[in-house]
Image 1: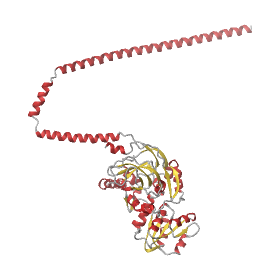
Image 2 (image 1 turned 90 degrees about the vertical axis):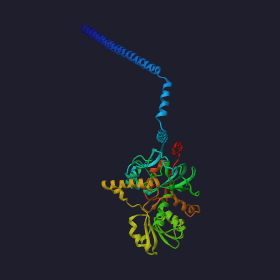
Image 3 (image 1 turned 45 degrees about the vertical axis):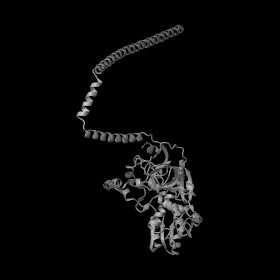
Image 4 (image 1 turned 180 degrees about the horizontal axis):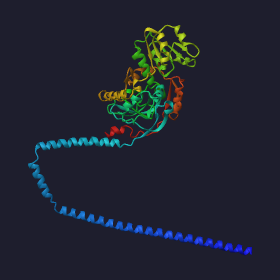
Length: 492
């Protein structure tokens, strides 16, 4: 009996599955029929609409052609010619002709100028590699980017340079911390090669090859090797290309490699300002003078020691014990090591100095005054805090107006490039010291050379303060030169 009940249950369950499957198929068929009917209806409606649209469009075209045919049938060229001839002979005077010709000429010139501007703006910008600060958070803001817009020649006295090597100055770290940010922000408003406040391209000096020049450039020619330095408010040199005023550029001494030439320019500017502009020294006024150079193997110290010795002065310097042999080789007659002796007591045993270069900072200022002659000069080469960096809303607004007036009436420093305060950044200074380089009396001291990809490591090395001489970044150029500056002058 149980077996019969089990078989009956199996038959019932099988029947239920069959019914459920059949109902499901029926529902799917109904849904498919509904979707097909809906699609067919939609297609039919669209076809009717399209047919009506074509009919309406055809009717409008026929109507327009009929009106055009009617207008042409009523047009007689001889009547138009006769009317124009009568108007020209009876209504037009010589004054009208002169005025119309002048307007036509002026309009043509205006159109040509506008066309050239539009054509120039359509030139696709090219990108380049650069070492930048993307904010003012110091070392953590420094990085290497691949998509900085390459600069272009925008003034007739500018030069486009393909950078082969660029030096890193400790000032670049201060720039990444915000040094000169207010001045730089104001000047960037008038520089088409910058797009806002960030990124800030770092680097104060470089060496490279001239790839394009403006129409008014006379100092250098295309293809020549050059070296240069730029002020702190100028777009930097740690990039594959730079555009600068020709006043900042000088021919690179043949004795120097690209790396050596990149290690000197900004240090030369700083040392020249300290020794010549503020210290009163020079080729004809240094003989017999006693000069003290603190941190003599820093970037500035290396140059200062060699300049003083080349001009006939006597140099005392303070260095670490590991750098003492180099200081002697550079020409320092008296070397005091500060890591195994009290250099302040050592200086007390010596005669006082005519000029003292404090390349360390405020911490040595009192000591420098103590060891300087009554009529001597103490010069600090470290960058002091800029007043503009701490301006508030009101003072900052007044400063902005001042910078705008300076731009319009005297041309901004990024255009004329060169002097702010006592410091002069100029190719003329580089030309003055080039004979010393050629004769071997001024040599470059390169601490380490990094590739552009390792620029962040290079900055970490500089931040430690242990470098001897200058740290340099070498650029490997793969970017084509096409359309990078020559296009502007060819189009114009």
